[in-house]
Length: 184
Image (cartoon, rainbow, N blue to C red; front, top):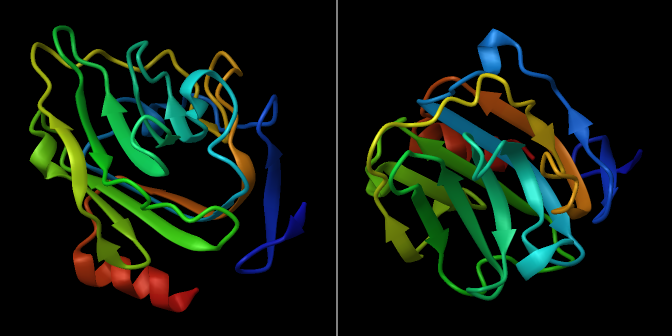
């Protein structure tokens, strides 16, 4: 535990820290959904291409997740696994400022259409560098645990502080997202 944006928060080391929320039926095959979190990333995280996981439910192995990305410098990416092509959307370069508190929210309607993935930073929708629609059938993540701060292989650790992690089973409106940001 450490001081967070709102009260206490968890400080992740970028290596092997994670919160395992399990795989209860209420967490399986989410979509529509909203992920929201206050984060203060020290680096882009551990692992290949520094893809520190914020929320992971078996990304690239049947599930979905939101993570930091370095291929497009200091960006955020959401990906969800489909049988033929994954749906994913990545923000423009330098969306994330390392060492600063930022509110991140992601909404997705559960479809294979990547334009229906919206990523917000500090209450405002970001711009995007990559948008790819999914094709085929969405792979189920029902047997995957939902992890905060790392991937299921514990090889994509988030490096920094996460606070007020929230997962909703619906798409929050832009007004609701702005209210979450402003309440912090």
